[in-house]
Length: 73
Image (cartoon, rainbow, N blue to C red; front, side, top):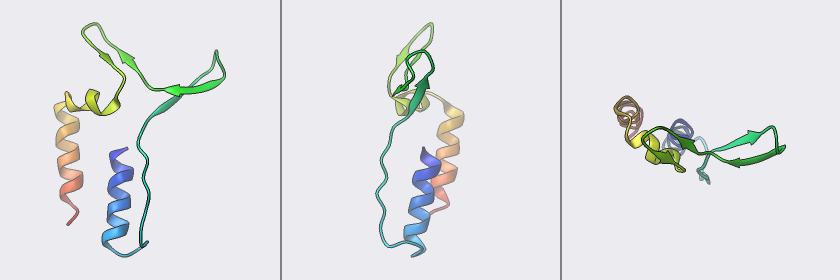
């Protein structure tokens, strides 16, 4: 999701498109129910219903975000 946000910011900064709207969230398709539902993850130690909170605890993802967004103005 951050890559898509960074891509939109790049396009805005480089006047590729004048404005944008970017919604954030992650859904997965439940094959049993045949419908889309919000992403959740349960681990032995934690429960995550927000993908951002999950990646805030991942040092590699934090470094990736910093490098990715650091390439913009």
